[in-house]
Image 1 (cartoon, helix red, strand yellow):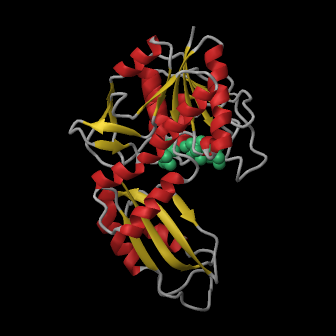
Image 2 (image 1 turned 120 degrees about the vertical axis):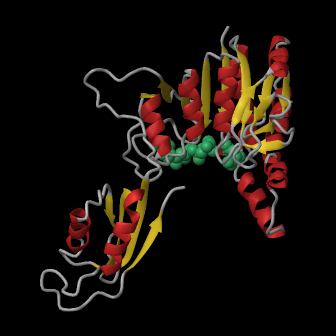
Image 3 (image 1 turned 90 degrees about the vertical axis):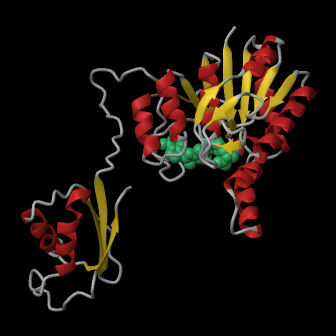
Amino acid sequence: MALIVQKYGGTSVADPDRMRAVAENIAFTKRHGNDVVVVPSAMGKSTDNLIKLANDVSKTQPGRELDMLITTGERISMALLCMALADLGIEAKSFTGSQAGIITDTVHTKAKILEVKGDRVREALADGKVCVVAGFQGISTDKEITSLGRGGSDTTAVALAAALNADACEIYTDVTGVFTADPRIVPQARKLVHVNFDEMLEMAGAGSKVLALRSVEFARNHNVPIHVRSAFTWEHGTWVTSQEPNMEDPIISGVVTDMSEAKVTVVAVPDRPGISAALFEPLAAANVNVDMIVQNTSHDGTTDISFTMPKADKGTAEAIVARWPPRSVPRGSSTMPTSPRSAWSVPA
Ligand code: ADP
Ligand code: ASP
Ligand code: MG
């Protein structure tokens, strides 16, 4: 008998019909002899709506109260799902994050999971029940309700799978798996049969929201295999595991965060050949090690240029950018640029 954790995203439980369809899949999994722990998200856009409501009521929104509010979406889902399961003759029991023993740090609205106790979940499983645990929430070491940051139900599911030593963690969503690009933006993107943790970390870190970044970090650290699949077609999706690529597969390395870099954006730069050389040559001459350069498409003959460089060289670079553009515009341009401005973004 396997223990399977199933997480259902907001679209998958968006309305009563979806809730019943999800209950059917849970019942199917249970009737095939598996123990099942379910982690539902809030229905549809209800977390967005709760945040909007808070914004409409208040400018202050203490983190504790905001977490009290936004964690309610998942509580609604867990109770309704248990009711839909009861209709199918499946005994299920719902638990808030706190009742499931998901202990977090004290940082409201983006708390980190420190420990999953899971005693009540284990007891209910031993009693033959399906356990439905509200996603996206826990209880802090100060005994306050916390939320785990947007998309945090993925993290709840993977953390529970790790703590309960589950055989698999299924993440049901509104696409059929992990694709080479967001299939909603790039329709010709290919579904990947398998992705390893490092590749998935790179994709999540770069902003692909199919899996929350922290859930992938958790899965890699605790070696939890994840199956990303559709709650609409139920077909096999993408496995995310520790399996290394074959010798001849392209190798993708992990994401490296470099907090020693600053990003500079120079706006309203005239879009003419040679103008950027007039910026980067003096920077190179002053030994400022420019790393990445991004130039946007031009609008009305001007563009923005962003580049990254060591934070330690900020003073030198600032002086050069302040003197730029040069008196003579490169390559015979006839007009002087409108005054470009620079913006500095330096990570703490
Ligand atoms: P859920 O509510 O089920 O958690 P999300 O909206 O958080 O769903 O994540 C699923 C979405 O992730 C998809 O609808 C898709 O638009 C987006 N997405 C971004 N990049 C990818 C990718 N590489 N592969 C699959 N989906 C992706
Ligand atoms: N409901 C939460 C959100 O919308 C958590 C989740 O869906 O994973 O961010
Ligand atoms: Mg999500």
